[in-house]
Length: 144
Image 1 (tube, one colour):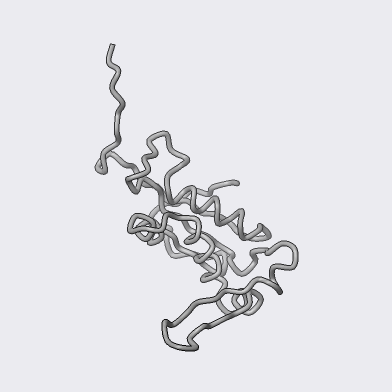
Image 2 (cartoon, rainbow, N blue to C red):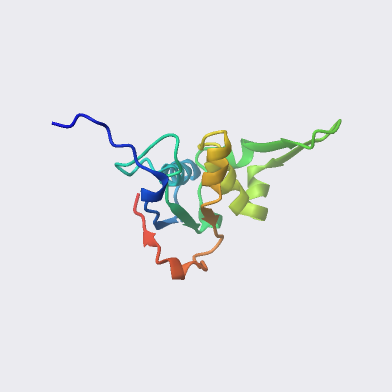
């Protein structure tokens, strides 16, 4: 009887491509599902110290929904590191101007805050419409 735990190696990790359709779905639901797929938590070979997640394509980011009054009240802030360098943009303006960035920021906040999280974020592709240019990778549709 062998009582050893099998640890998955980086070479053994199998990566797939998944499509998430964000049309008429809340931003948080789409972001949590994308982060789960990017981290690889849906796989039995999940390991916290390895990037064992899959590539994710999010479509229809312009049709995503923010529940409640978040569209008017929620604000994205970032700082340029200079004096008086605080920049603010409301989510209403952000969704109208650059909805891909809003989705990307939501997913980024749900990934680890280290080099592994930054590596996982590179596997995320967000598109405004329902068209994408990754047919060659044969992505599967992920229902959630």
